[in-house]
Image 1 (cartoon, helix red, strand yellow):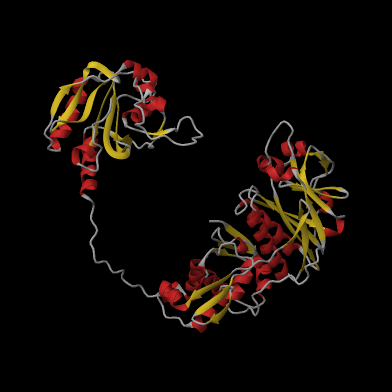
Image 2 (cartoon, rainbow, N blue to C red):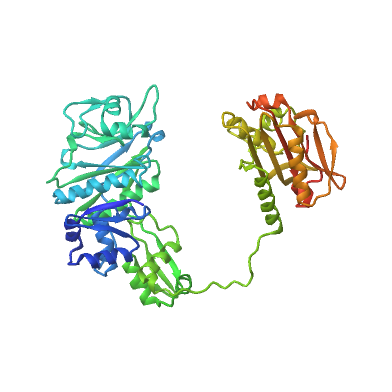
Length: 559
């Protein structure tokens, strides 16, 4: 989980009341977060990644104030819908980084502590929740140095002076030499005619997005008005980030004004400041938590977690804060109420269980067979059910039976086009990929195979094993197969067989009650060559579903 480091003096200033270190640590712990340390200059807190609104001193102080009932209002509003500035979105950007939001913030009093907190928060948010700026990126500019209107689009190579730079540089040069360009350059798709997302005003480039801002609009101590831009690949998360930042700036006593985002001539205002409303029956909430709380107490607990709440008949109406990303449904609110109530005060109740659980007979038998195979010196392999015609048939020297295999519709990979009909090809693939490893190699697998018979899909459980060894021969695999069947108390007969995947005269079928349940033998050299295996290889495969009646197919294993 991400760890945030806050300036302890600035954090206490934002709290607005006196609290000692012990009490502060207790309150943070009750919220469900761990304090890693409180020092003279800073406090370190481990935060769950789904609460990015708590990644800075402003958000964390808000949460503590709410939790300790030090907040009177839970709503964040922007009174004036008149946009302070317009951002026009071009057509070229839609395939690269299509969505943008923003705001203007006036009346701030930025000092070293508050500015450092903002920069640290935005970097933390964009690197964690924003997935290294791929999902979300935030830009912060000195509004007094901007001449609107603004344009957000993708451009060919242009130049500007990057943040803290001394001279103008081309976009392509910044991507190769600038620290931020090197770190975040792969967020911009490459190409012969590479297009770069950028934000412009009438004087030129404000930012190469999501790499670096222009030095012209650098924010410093004493800056009083800001332009904030938020860009990303998801319209929802771009808009919610704007709501979260607007709430943060309102808590910093800034005056937030909206901007108009114009897509193809149609304007929309940002931030939207959208808040969900959810109604939860008191009975449901109490049953979920396991405690009789009462409506008044539920409302009080909701306030502790930042919700505005009211009684509505036999339900509680919750107003979800604008800055919350993580509240998806009623269960998230129930969890918050439980946190506010305190897990220590919720009594444990034994879960009634009237039926004793037990493994199925089939599971017990499969486990026994695995133990036997391990005892014979085989290691278990685990492969996917998906394969292709080349592996399942061609490499095994077989013709594909018509309408017998399950094909994948519209497959985008040549290696995955069908469901496997038997397991030995998968195991030979394992051996081919590990051909350089030490010999002998002995592996087995018990899992599903899939076939179509009589226009019905059959899922059978097969046991298959292969062994590669310079000295491997027919008698070795015959001994393993016979020993296994005898231990499982299966009455069987061995009969001579012809299978194109195996050497003629060195392959046999195993029959039980006049039904062929499997086969074993020496793998044909051509098959070995197809899989890149250089040493003699033996193997067997048994249809356990056919043997034990586990909804088995009506026929034995095909060649």
